[in-house]
Image (tube, rainbow, N blue to C red):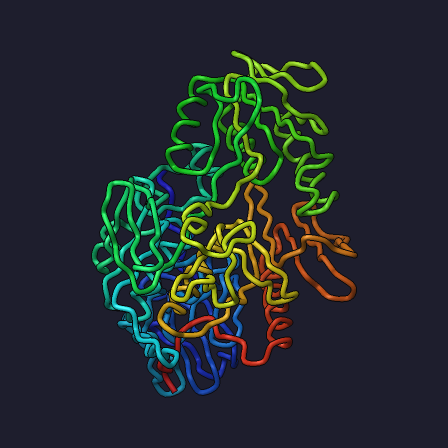
Length: 531
């Protein structure tokens, strides 16, 4: 018997909803023509927007409403409920908006409407003018988000996005998760259809890396000799996996995972293999282990660490992840290192041998600073930027894995190797190339998916004095809070998405309390809705 379609959620908003039952700052989930729609009241104004996140399709009704912003429970994308605009990554496309009409005592949602356009105008510092040509080096998370934000913010000049890979910008986190596991096809990966970049007048170059930045003439040169003049430049060159340095490391069956092409090669190798050894017990290593187990391979993890991810998550949560993997058949060899990769196995420093037809090295990454270094930019284990993401050279910005910026909480320079932060930095850098003067103060956020467990992490805790783990939760849930002194600095959760959203908001407000005039998340937009 064919599956029956899921019933439409909540009331039919075309038929109306009693106005006096929708409380102020409350979200109501209903539907219009079967599509889920959120009805939101702010004082005398009522707005209606699509209720499904445009990133991965999560229900925004399960998220958090804070002011005029609804936050997605899955990956913390943010939308303005007045306009539907996606104002914070990882969502890059807006929500559909609907017309709301008051009929007597009912709020009636009618047809979709064109969302209002942002009205913010550039405010350039004295002596500086709006750039007419912008170049972005790097078509990953930060670069793609910056290019799209520039167009959304009204930039109509020449815009060039230089990508070293042949593929159009894609969802890199999926490489170690569903795509590697074989549960998601390649059609899931593009951030947006390639035609959309073309439609927005974003000129893309693919497959040829940048060779040189001439800061004096403001020109980017590619390896094939092409030159691209700029008046503002964003360097979003990301990072490269750290390579093994041991006998046998150059064999074809030794892989690294960073690009889509890397992942295609790993999948092809996995199709011919029955055993895999993963060197490293960080996020990429553990996610890849779960994916390769899903494909049916025998998987071993070798790591010098005592507990997986102990330095990031703490020993208790790290042990829980290890036990999860062991329950799925993964074998750990902790406190040990690989000394040699032979034709059919890997050898450990204690002399033990593990059969391996596929080897994946996941031992960290290093920022791609070569271009910046040769251009004379100040480096600090990455490209040093100020709180506006501008480098030591005026008009040149950096974002993503390559950038080291001042932590708004401590002032210390930090670098954060996660997708959502890279996208959000790209968005902020784009606005600052247009003179907005927006400090980057977004709370770092990342997630990891391993089997049926997803950990959401908000904040930044390179070290902590106290770790509070909530007791009495169901077995499929987890919540722990990291403190320095009495100050909350990070939260990690499993199965408690709304708690994590609330913690992110709490951390943001803590930063806002420290620095007056904290920058807003998005542009100024006209207020709408029914009164």
